[in-house]
Image 1 (cartoon, rainbow, N blue to C red):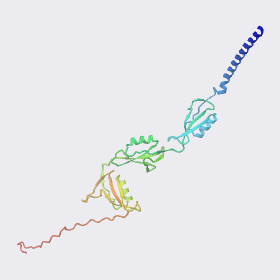
Image 2 (tube, helix red, strand yellow; image 1 turned 45 degrees about the horizontal axis):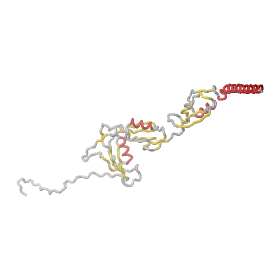
Image 3 (cartoon, helix red, strand yellow; image 1 turned 120 degrees about the horizontal axis):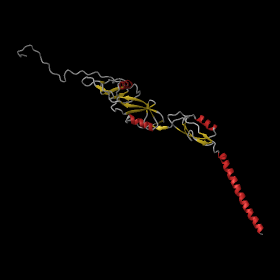
Image 4 (tube, helix red, strand yellow; image 1 turned 180 degrees about the vertical axis):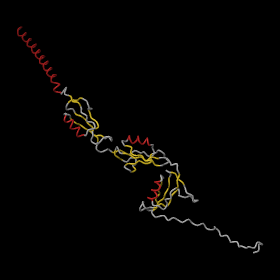
Length: 285
């Protein structure tokens, strides 16, 4: 009986020892093959993808066994379809087969509302444009009493109002007040001219005008100016003077203007009886 018990105990210790030995062997085998299973040590250096066309970037990543995910954004400084950013960054060491995230520049610029720039300074307008992802184009100086203020905002040569939707990155031309000129000149006489002729003359002299249209207008270009203020001449016949940037009020109607000839002043308002002439100095009639 004691012999059987002793053999049984030896068998238990033998099996425990055998299980321990097997565990150690499996542990060594597992960790020895872990690097091969997980690709440990097989790292690749991330290639340069920035500023490359999307198609070229995809070919580079696929050739090195990377997975690809992408999104799009817009940068006014980059060409459409170019890579704007990548994750992981260039030069990083990553495992083969990892997913690389890249951002592509959109081919069409998203729209943004035009900000209100009227009346603000040039420096402020430049900062507002930049914050709205717009660019400053040309600047045009126009004589105006509001020296340095924005008078008009133009997009593609046309006036654009605040709130109008335009593409991001668009160039905005600013018309800036240049102050009143110091040199006076004669007020132009535009009464009797067509609206197109009169407006061209006034603008060419660096003047501004306010136009008032009266009556039915069938053709605005050929409509005639029949009134202006200040007039070319004052009530005494003298020539009126004006400075650049000042205003002229004009009124327009369709019918041509017939200038009235200056009326001749009557000899007298009341007729005075003529006095008889007598060369006789003695006072006889």
